[in-house]
Image 1: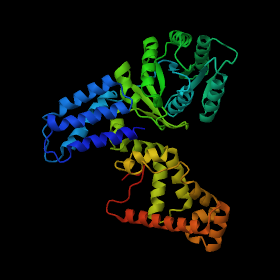
Image 2: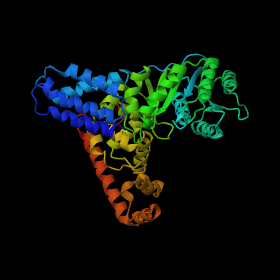
Image 3: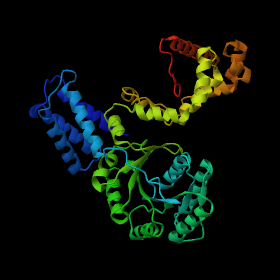
Image 4: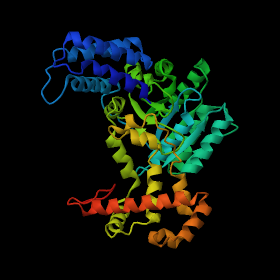
Length: 440
């Protein structure tokens, strides 16, 4: 997401390269290019115009201190304005009541049902939360089936009434069931349509009036750009929803919805989602997103994702093995699994400052570790625990078992040994090595 916008903004800032001061003359082309970049990203013209006017007014006459260049100062001004445009700060997510009721609304195909499962998984992992999902889409049997599969996958309860065609009574009965079974969060997945119609709007409004949710989340497909913003306005006029969820951020999207929706409906983006995996749901932080748009990465989110996968006890155990040069193939396999749980590999690399641009044209597949995993899986427990014991005959067997050439196995063994030496060197440094979850 935002790749094209990021490139065009970077190009715009180059207009100030070599300038000693920002003034009306040298900023004119930069502001024009920024506006064009926003319009190309499918941002509404009025919003793009107002945004660039604010940037220009802030920038003109701004003193440039010796430590930074006019281009760097302009990046900071644009970052601040992008952050403000997308909400300024993280929006609160309210879970009140017993049970707390969360209503999910949006068009068909926006990712509502998948998001319902992701949100249930997100809340399940929070202390004291016991969610139940409710299949209140009475028109699409596949939606009930999909939510049932997702609920089983993440281990949460689901309430559905396949023969009932009254969404209001389904929602009300689900709340009664939640109280009876001590579920303290109810997430209701409502019906969607391919386009807005009066029947759908009336139905979801009736469900809202009947269950009085503490949160109404409007789910929007980020790939639909300005159309998503127009749809959000229509829903908000009827539902007065409390927040927006942007889905499919891993798709080929220009970013117009993320940049325009808060301005248009004055409701915050609360969550962003990508992919189909149930753990790919993130709280929306406007400042972090602005940094990513400007190619600054998002190291804070990357660290949080790493911390979520590592526990202190395991990290200390791993550190001891590394210090004793006992890091083995099983440890390596475990670390690969932790990395894979953090999300899409290319997205993760894009969070590292300076790396996103370097890998933008590189095809990094989620199964990039598949060959390595196959080789390790073809080893015996003894071989995994004793990397030095892998003779040529053992390597030949591993190659055959993993469907690899002996040269590939030998190359992996060499890389593994080099990695172990690097770890050893890090731990011999004065400050010691640092690994996710480790403390000093």
